[in-house]
Each structure stands twice: as structure tokens, then as C-alpha cells.
Image 1 (cartoon, rainbow, N blue to C red):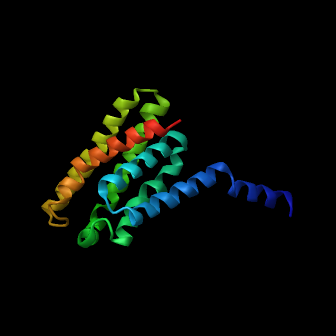
Image 2: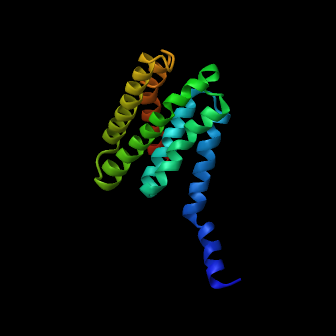
Image 3: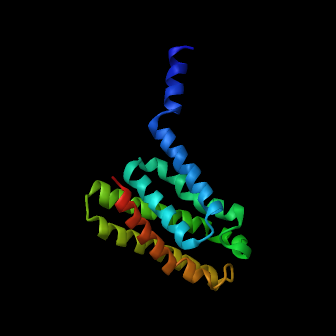
Length: 170
């Protein structure tokens, strides 16, 4: 085995790649294993925040897409409304990215207060998702129940996720 091949093998097994693989696996499988939105959303948001605090921004995009894609593919979380979830997927991904970017910019880079960043991130994510759900409800693309699911519940799970992450961040 030549030097380049050894270097490639070490890079594949690096801590960063191993951690990202683990995050990817967890974020994709959680919707299959946990059908409760409060518990699932809390864990997913805690993991997304953890990634924002510990990883480079270029790593965010795939991880932000995995939970909702898994929920759509498995159909477990929203049962009969899972096909309607398809319309929300782009907004969920953007909402996850907004939450992650808020933590990266305001907590990691600008060193703002964790609690304030948590509330601000949760508000922005939930406002984006709530507004998106309301628009899609107006066009009869999603049921009225999505207003709650993608409004108050998103704020609660993002806030709880930030809280869980705070206590396990060290």
C-alpha cells in the first residue's frame, strides 16, 4: 500500500468523518425509531445544534435534510399525512439550516448568550415553518393540523433541543 492510499484510509477514518457518519446515521434512523414528535424533535434539534457548535458549516446541509427525508420515506411520523409532508420538506430543511446557522454565527462566532441564541434560533425556525405551513394550508396542500405541528411544536422542540444540548455539551 503506497503513502497516498494510507493517507486516504486515515482520512476516511478520521474523527471528523466518523462523527459525521454517526450524526448522519442517527439523524436518519431516529424518525424510524421514535414516532413521538416531541421526543424526536427534541433529540433532532439537540443533534443539529451540536453539529453547529462542533463542525464546519459545509457539513450542515446533508445533516439538515436527513431527519425530514427519513420521516417522509418511512411514513411513520405523520402516518396518513406523510405524503403531504413532501410539500414541507424544503422548508423543514431551511428551518434546520436557519437554526444551525444562528448557533454558528451568534454563539460560536460572536459568543452571544446561549439562552438568548437558543430562543432566537427557535423563534426563527418555528416562524419560518409556521409561515410556510400557513401558505401551504391556504393552497390546500397540507392539512390544518400542520399549523400546530410546524408552529408551536417546532418552537418547543427547538428550545428543548437547545436545553438538552446545553447540559450535554461538555
